[in-house]
Length: 232
Image (cartoon, rainbow, N blue to C red; front, top):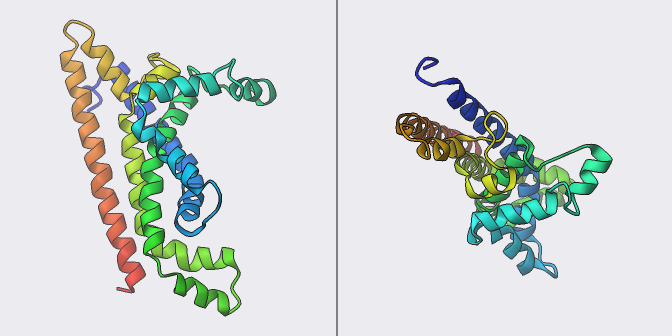
């Protein structure tokens, strides 16, 4: 396979895997918190939070990328502060690609986890609490194991979405080979060059293989987690 893919194609594959992994892992803690809040808590702004979480699903990806550029660009109100205080730059960097992928995949992760939280009987948590367990301990020992299949499914969905993200990424971080060029961006670039269909086709096959592997792995992990929860 080393000879089958060229250096530029390998760079795009490695960067896509890196971006997708970072986007998934970095957004998972926040997704757990938001999903739990939407499923169990009632507070002013509940509907607004729900709408904001799902906004990337209904907005054109280019619009999301442009909003990220306005917010996290070097002159953005958040990006400028991060650059001056922490030397952290997102625009036109691979970290920006990870941020864009995380934003686009976040609603899918939250949705899957929220459905799992809503399926948990609150009386189980209340019973554990009545025995003296603190709320964090109840969540770690009762809720989290029960929602594990949903967490796995949400994480894999987010990873797959991040692997295929194009519109927001190319708007926010451009398409710089070796720096911000992910698999979708590389496929797009090859299709713009005469004779680049072969390279684009190889990357399409790689994308399909990675996506199918992730889905099969998620099914296996989710079933294993479900069997452990059921005590089988």
